[in-house]
Length: 433
Image 1 (tube, one colour):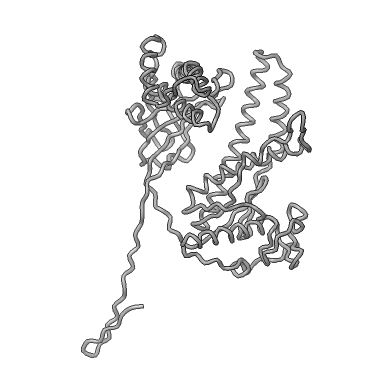
Image 2 (cartoon, rainbow, N blue to C red):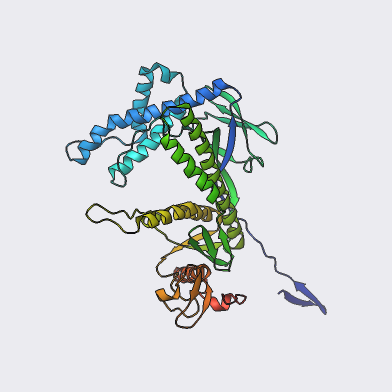
């Protein structure tokens, strides 16, 4: 509406001007590239750097193991856990080791940053002491930080870019679809070999528009191999049964073969290829699903699931053996395949706000009348309230309860979001039959 002013018999309408401010925030975005070393010498040098990182990790682990055990037993002083103190010791080690001086110092020294964090968590009792890294099991990788300006990235054409690695030179990197954050500032790069080729994960600092809170709220229920939303949509993980069977077949075959033989190496290479395909399918599904959910609303509510406790083994001990161990192991694999943590992580940075609620009784509560009873959900797919007779899809009903709990939590925090009952918000749902 505007304001009318009357001047000499003429009505003048003054319209208000609405100014919308765009809030830009800085965030970190990761872009994955495929590395093309262009020569065997450069590829060999990258493996040497990864081996040096593994050597430095094991060297400092052995050096601090005795001090750690003495400190835990109350017989010694607390070991130095800062990256600065470990870096000073690394400088002495590098001057005493000839082959280390032939490799770039920054990526090898960066290993001690991860070791310092692991040692600090061990000192606080959050985790155990770090394990040694073997050549056979550890994934070849190394990290280059931007703080000392040790790597460079420049665009070659629409398909390829060039990456400069110290003491290796320029290597080609490529990505299908190009670089979405080309104008960002690269802060760090992680190079990792996946068993087939080298991949570069470049961490860009970019300015993105902060998504405004539009008032739309969506509840998300994460189930085994699928997730459901409170608006009636469900997203199922692609069928991986054939690839899972193929992977188990290669695992059994490799277990029967002689270690170190050429045939075992060939089977291991095929096993890695199948596992890589499964991981890529799951990762793509997570990104596509979370993107679609994030486009619907700015606030997403999920359950605060303790995945580590949920996927604990049921085998028990010799004195108290567990029950249904094989069935529980299969359920654990299915839950880990769904990647609850990955879904939450993607929703957290794609949506404007992520709210976690207590998951207790969300699947047993009727979203229509609020009655809680385990008899409401006798099957995995169908929900039938024993109190009011409301029938609906079980996962969607749980998502609606999650949304209601999240709205109540937001209302208690003073966000101003109204907690309208679900049956007034969704008027298009049909009885489940």
